Amino acid sequence: MTKVLLHVFLTVVLFSNSCHLFAQSSLFYRSEFEKMGDQIADVDLPGEGSFDYEIVGGNNDNHFVIEPTTGIISINTVIEDVIGEVTRHDLLIQCNNEQTSIVVVDGYDYTLSNSNEYVILESHKETYIVPGNPYLGYNNLWGRGTAQEGVDFRMATLCHADLPDQTIFVWDTPSSPGDFDGASVWCYISVLWGNRKGIREDLSGFPIQLSSIESMELDFDFKQLYGTEGYKIALNHFVTDEAYLDDFSSNDGDFFFVFDQKGTWIPPYPTVLTDTIINEKPFARLYKEENGYEWRRVIIKDNEQLLQGSIDMKGIYDSFISRGYLNKNQYVPNIQVGLEVTDGFGALKFNSLNIKLNEEPLSINATKGSEVLVYPNPSKGIFRVSKAGPWTVYNMNGQVMKAGEESVFDISAFSSGVYLFEQNGHVIKLIKR
Image (cartoon, rainbow, N blue to C red):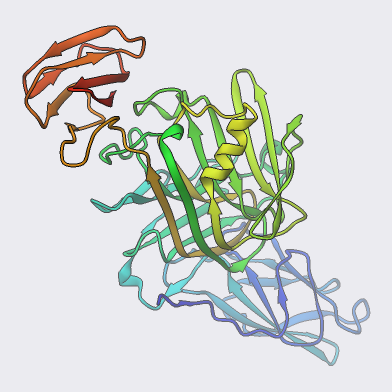
């Protein structure tokens, strides 16, 4: 099993940039991805105000400076983050005859005992794709307001050979919701299941039509390794009316399932479904429509967390469909499971993640041993037929669009969408991209 070495030398663990440290050894996780002058800690020892503070040990590189009268420790020089090297400072602080030891560990640097098994994604929209694996790693960094990737925040997706299992997300966004013109930093680092235009388009079976889902379950086991709580773990996907893979920006709405709402804000929604219990945890089901865009949320309540369990995704879809908040004829091109980070720093690991999907057969009235296959499906226009004999292609209004007997036919000139192929009473839905 992958082992992440976090270098914990813990008596007291502190996660605030304005904490009080008492006369004992303390561990303080923090990020080096900050600016010169940023405050790290506020030491509180007897004699403060009458005697001066000084750093008497562990600061040979003069990385930190302490204000003599207040005990506030700040960054004096910035140390660059280095993957695979964890920066640690054992500071000894003295005021009069009292001393305290502060262990400062970098909050973004990390080390892996088996780093050769990982591919590290740090750049915006960098991906890790393994042929045949329906999951891919996706490092999606973007800032709202004036925040800039690589300047104001940094995140990484560590993709293991067993992707999606053992995936690790590391983030460093030293900001608060009021920073960067009031919007803070919003980033998505995730494992993506399925196709997304311009990123991956080679997997068959996507987009998935909601009405075709016979059963769908999500099994998961998440663990936060260290850090603050300005993030949420979420499953999200963007719903479309089209059966073909289209540009991301053309989606008609979204669907979010939020596992961990600690430290983040839940906006109010005007229309809600009845609250529900999932894996013995309370969840709100929320909906709103704004300018033709539909927002659907299943959000854990009461500052709870759901880090291990199994979720009946079809049951959740059906609860929205039954209220008219989701259309069973709509499509899902992919599902992303990952983090939405607003501020802070830390690391989270997917011990395991598995989406189990069973779809109803596309072939209607077929009998075992005599199925008709049309492939590839979806296609940009060229289809092959597995059995000889007359066939007909209809549009969704029942109009004949093409007929013939050849084993290969071309509908490239047709508009993208869904068509019906019929041969000897067997009907198959064709998806023309």
